[in-house]
Length: 296
Length: 222
Image (cartoon, rainbow over all chains, first blue to last red; front, side, top):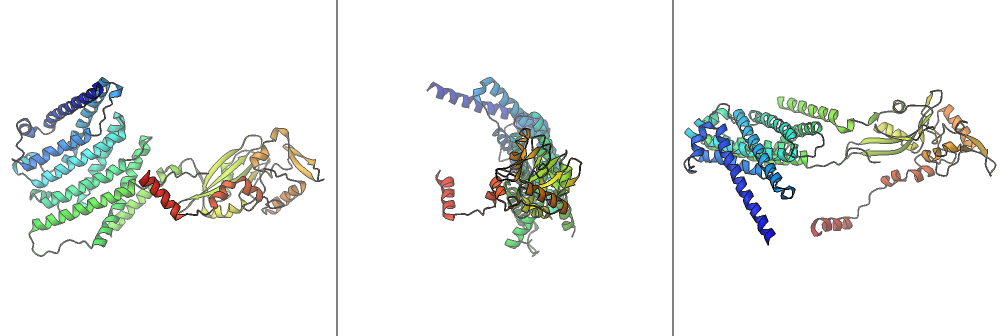
């Protein structure tokens, strides 16, 4: 019975420990969002500004996602495993917040958090920010897993994934007729949904590109590039296939409200892109050919 | 139109990168015709025996050959090469035979002959002895007694007639499968020595009910 109580106590202690890590996150958040200082430090009224709630809690979900990759091995010693858990949770937090900072500067280079969220309560901004935070968390989770507790490999993979993710974001203007900047100013929800689908789709492809065995970092990175490139080649084929099978086309201009049209188009774009990305991930990472060397 | 050009360029980049960085491009040589063997094999005297042929791929096949390189004064080495379909089809009938040899004077020859033809009649490797049947047969010196094993002769003993026929074939550049056609894809010795090749050639007979039963057992019951 003592053993059972001991194990339960350790679990409870770790729950408290994770809460402390979240407390640390709260203050780390202020470092990257000084304008958010007031909102974070005072009591949060979640119904006051739903865009801000969306913006803030997306990060919390992201942090939880990254924490979910960490492991605590009591059998190697409680102090060592606590230190390991603490160190890697700090690394995870820092990398995650840095990733969000960098990528949001790419996506929202024309927009300010203070204006769009705190003043204008722009739902499109909130939605894109929410999706971006989740996508980065999923991506970072994969990278954490692949780095296998090596900080050097983690840094290389993190930088590499940010480059690929950042580049993929720039492709939106080639894939969608929705103008990001002008519709974002108009608080267009259709754009928010469409861009969110696009981000999730990119994340799915990049995750499957990163998820494979690696013995040597150079060949692993080459394979990631090749898989990403393969994803770029396969995805349009699925898009064409879905358009052909379901006879999809943009709605005719029959004088309907523009925001309604954009909303429908945004949902359609997000759904098709995400479907295609998921199907592409099967092609690029779930077809196994075995060894290419001859067996005699 | 621009989209198609862009897609084509991306496809070319993908194929180019895949080819140049593929592990199959490293460590395995490619030969498109018999003359390619000369570059792969060094030393004199040397005999190269084709020991296996294999192809992989579902629609577009890649062909591989396995060769045994016998130097005579050293142990043998095995070489695997990637090859073309044309060359693979051309050389297939000569499985188990010597398909390349380099003589002491450095001259090279590609006529398919029984394995070890280069050593038969070479006085530094063995001599002719009188057999009970009255004919002269080749016997390697004691120090080279492992060579017949390397060559895959099993119970084959070449006689003087074989030697003469080898010399004629070399002059005429005409394949020689053995006096009783013991070598080559239909040869009795080849079939015995390289049985794994013939095993692979057998069509896979699939018993659907057995297959389904095993599948269900492995995936749903166990």
